[in-house]
Structure formats: C-alpha cells, structure tokens
Image 1 (tube, rainbow, N blue to C red):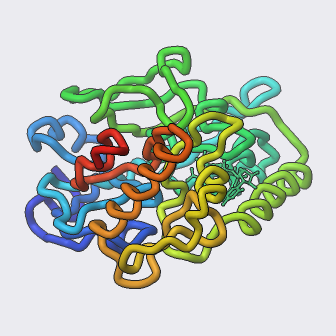
Image 2: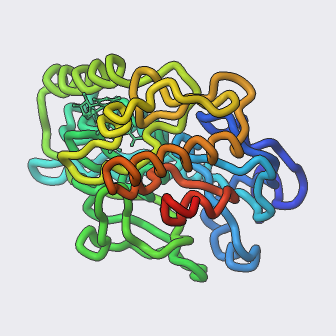
Length: 302
Ligand code: EPU
C-alpha cells in the first residue's frame, strides 16, 4: 500500500487533528492512491478521519489504525451537462473549497452549506448541513467502499437512506466521492446567500473557540437542543476545562487542556437535566471514539 505512512509505524496524538483539541494517540495513515483501497479489508477494523470537526475522542486514543484520504481523493472537476454542470468531488476536498469553487463558477446549491467545517467525505458521512439544507439535497450519486468490499461502487441518491445528520449507510462505509448536478446561478447572489449564513453563525456560535460544533441533535425541528439547554440554565456550566458555551448552549468549548473524561461528565449532566426537567432524551450529534458508554445509556443511568 503506497501511503504517506503505513499503519502501525507512528503513534500521533489525535488531539491536534480535531477542532475540539481532545484525543489520545493512534496510528495514522493517509491513503493517497485509489489502488490502496483493495487492501483495506486486510487491515481489520479502522477508523476514518476527515477534518475532525465533529469528533470527541477518548483520552486513551484508539487502538485501530486511523485512516485519512488525500492525493487521488483531493480532486474536483466540473463539466457542462446541458443547462446544468456536473461536479465530481473527492472526499478529501475541503468543503469550503467546494463551496467557493462553485460560487466562483456560478453553480448554485453548495452555498447552502457555507460555514460548515468539514471534508466532503465527513460531510457525506453525517449528511452535514445548515438550517437551509443538507449535503444530500445536492448529491446525485455517491462513491463508497462498503464494509468488507475491495472495490468501490457508485450509489444513486435514491439508494442512500439519508436523514437528518446521517447518510444512513452501514457503519464502516467509506465515502470516497460524490457527484452533484448543479444549476447555474448569479455568483453575486450565491455569495450573498453564503455570507448571510456565515453572518448568522458568527453571531450565534462560538466560532473562534475549540469545539466540535453542536453536541446534540435537535430533538425535533421546532425544538433546538441549544434553546432547550439555554432554557434549562446550562450556559456556563463547567467540568474541568470543558464549558457549555455562553454563546450557544449546544456547543461545548475546550477552554485549555480539556480532557475527554471531562467532556463526558458534562454531557452526562446535560442529558440528565434535559430528561429530568423536560422528559427529553438528548441524542449525541458529535461522533465519539473510545469514550464512555455512559453517553449512550438512558440519561438516568449515565
Ligand atoms: N437558541 C437559544 N439559545 C442557544 C442556542 C440557540 O435560544 O443557546 C435558539 C436560537 O435563538 C434559535 C434556535 O435556538 O431560535 C435555533 O438556533 P440556531 O439558529 O443556532 O440553530 P441550531 O438548531 O441550534 C442548527 C445546526 C447547526 C447549524 C445551525 C445554523 C443542529 C444540531 N445544529 O443549529 O449545526 O450550524 O443550525 O444552520 O442541527 C453542527 O451540526 O455542528 C451545527 C453547529
């Protein structure tokens, strides 16, 4: 397998690869050639890392190799197709690059995702989005490596059971690329729309703090977890260096040398409060690696 580093060679702290800046060590490997995909099932269980913007990793790190995509998977191509354009983009491409390339080319749709910190692969995996749309609203086909397979395949949008914050494909699916069929739009209008979304985020979210974005899924479209936790007086709650953001109550921010154990304890406290005071079971939106099972048990048992 040609890669920048082979699994098993270098232990690196995962904290520096996540926006929350928490996480113990793991063996990291970047897959740069498509030819390497065929050997993946021989590695056994692996974990896939994008931009690390939605991840809480345990203080002990993880024992499985952590794989990233680069090289062949960092490509973006646009070709005209009738009165639309066909965009093909690799999973390693930064979502911000995708959005800005489309706005410059006058291609409408991706600007709805402005301000979402993600790689394209990470965004596909969790069906990332904003209040105005999800990535799977735009996707025509997605290229994946299904668990245990050696050959990638393309799935039509209709074959992907995407829902709020999940592509809905089996755990272990690797997202390699996607295609979008995009209509043309006025670049100035697209930029204005993106800027409006980013303004809303800058005014309502702690963007410069270390965080993993929203901690919990919204229990319902008309019941945002942030508003609920705010109403329950959770802003400013702290465990160690982890704090419920005073700006947006669904964000946990790492004020310094935060530890996963502290994040777990704070999350347990928030879930318990939402259950006891409102009868609501908050479900995690952040992905967790090798963290406590308390995060998924009933709030009273956490
Ligand atoms: N609100 C409060 N207090 C708070 C936070 C929010 O009262 O502390 C209120 C707001 O005033 C607003 C409502 O709750 O009336 C919804 O808040 P917001 O507009 O911030 O949206 P959200 O539902 O909290 C969702 C996504 C965000 C995305 C924003 C903007 C989820 C869990 N979160 O947040 O996504 O950036 O819309 O599009 O779906 C993420 O996925 O990590 C994420 C940050």
